[in-house]
Length: 522
Image 1 (cartoon, rainbow, N blue to C red):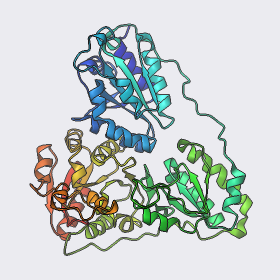
Image 2 (image 1 turned 90 degrees about the vertical axis):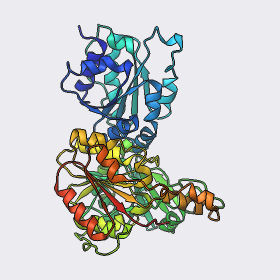
Image 3 (image 1 turned 135 degrees about the vertical axis):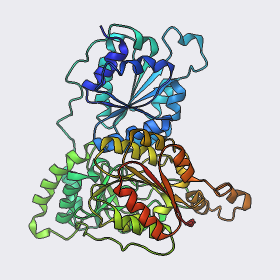
Image 4 (image 1 turned 90 degrees about the horizontal axis):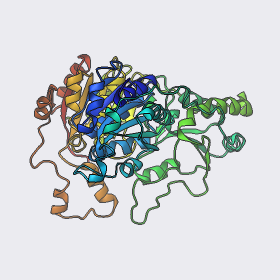
């Protein structure tokens, strides 16, 4: 009879989870040992829990099914919380496996004892603690079913439950999706066909594949604009894909984008608000006089609602109302840049060279201002973004995406300050020989915080305040840091150098890092 750890892994595999991003400790050693008994489960070692949780996020965004993490007690889970926060905001399906002290050991208040349930609850939509080895496989299957609904599911496994014999197979038939989707179709149709300025705001799975195509049909039938969230979890874009305008990060810019709208239809997205509160500025960014309509009742149902609604609204509107709204992006590329290396010229190089089918992971922050325009007409690709705003997501997300899609090139666009949060991801990329090219925009500054210093009205801050946002004393050596983790790297200081290095890195499989030295934007 299998022990608990064996039945747990078998339950996960049978439910469709066969990749585990792991940073285990003593309480998880029976899980580690059981990996040899269930070879279908692929373990991927990460040197930091934030890499494991971010990689699970990237994997699930691209594979469209959950990965699991293996974390050690409360402190291990706590180390992974920032990227679990991002994953929660992306509605990414993840199963967290968190080891705990044996049931009899918990009352002793050992040094690593903590409130794992409370930590898990801050980011999870489903939390369970298994207390019977016979229930472990079933609990694992239920965790996978909960995650498949676009939630983070955390299963806490005491050490003695893992080592005890008596594991059972999981029951089948868990997690069947509901066939009914409540939606006030007529009210939304009336809004979009009213003749008043209207827009669809897309989020969740409405920003890719069939969801985008159906949204474009609706836009063409009604004249509505197509918008998407500032930080979509996964946006399909490029030549031949319907063009979608992303909301700006800055509240003033969003106000300009939405000015004049009378109807805003949410499709898997939340009503727009500013990221932070600013003196004298509104937090709710919906314009006065604009009515907000929710087409999909929950983010994970957005793409399921759109085909039905597209058929309905096109019948109601009639062919005579068709417009040129939501055109497909035309093929176009910038010329290869020459001269000074800036954030703008680097964006042109990326747009000139981005290969078809690429997965772009974007945590470039202020240096990424020109990227959307430079890559809009590149061959079709996916764009993954910093959904929850917790920095340190880019390199782990790229790692997971590369595990999920080994035949597709992954381009990670990373800012220098964020890079230092989870740079251990490079070691996993080298260990697994993942096809990830990382570009670090090296402006030697927390430039986004310099921008925020202005936004909150503290622009007159003195030398000591500005020094707290400076990364040049001492300068970070990203080439040496990458090399120390087994990833070849080079520094680019001119547009020609950067273009040549990027072309070479994209052509060769395996990990590579480019230290792209640019002047600060702010």
